[in-house]
Image (tube, rainbow, N blue to C red; front, top):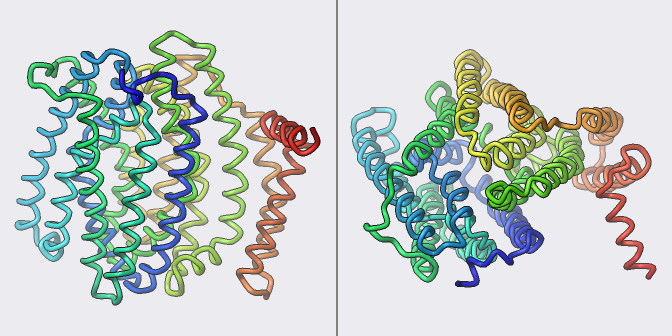
Length: 486
């Protein structure tokens, strides 16, 4: 059996690789984003993000439930080569069919809808992104838990992307080149992935078993589509109702929020296939222990990040995006709590409900979120623009999180530790006020950010040791003492 398929990959090793990838996903955007935002300007950034939001919608319909279904089913069949071939062949065949349909629809709508015709050059570039996204097959590598390969390949491609940005983008009118470079990262990754996977799995027309997967494929696809109605639909709707500049403000805040959330997402990406495997093996004690540990990790990291981002939102936007994006700081202050809310959703939905195959509950949950998101978008965006989009998003996510708590308790009797959550909220209040006062002082904003970061770290070290008494923090300190003072 190939090394990639062996279950000997430890959870720690996978998380290490995923964390390296996450750090890279922090570093590379931090290198390119300040440059891109200053060279292209808020309007051209808005144009690229508006077009990309449209392309991502077509990708969403083309992918349906392949990401979740693929990770889950590949994880369950990775120890049986014949079953692995069958699962891989069936899922990618379904994906190819839906991708071809959406590619045709995208071409037709681009040349027939006036609003889209204005952006047809970029949309035709996006058509390439749509087609090659089908062959990205990240779900396969996550399912077999080959995070080492994902990390190395992604970093190499990102280095080439960064080089391309600085080599070819020098003025505001270069925004089509920027979008070409963004698309090429998908194309190159897809070519590498499909070539490398031949060493591990084989596609065969004889192995197709569409009946076993199409229902879950559609249900999980509808879930993804509905979820997008309160996560990414507001970008496209904002572009149609308002203008490219409002899109630029909003997507700048969202991009920074996404960077901050990425570290916790690295953990859930590692745990999802492992949770699926544990559930399929009926190892419920290990399943529950991973859940409790993840919740504690979420609380430890999310609250300091939220507090710091609220207090220093203006400075963060100025540092990373430059002048002209001031309204983005208000959006960032509104949506930053999604780090905690989406983090809890990832634990409850991705780590528990999905591995348990509670697809109908997940679908109902997404319907509630979609309805909430669409209604609030219609009510708020026309009048409040990017700020209204921010309020709409966080409100919908909050409703979805509450519903996820309900379904998790219904099927497993597991509850969020509200006592621990309350402690974190109460402890966050005084430091948030203190940092807001510090950030408003008339001193250099970079110096203020650095001082605030040090104060925040010292505060939370004391809080976790003496007030919250976090098990993980205390264990970490104990191990650190043993290393320093053996």
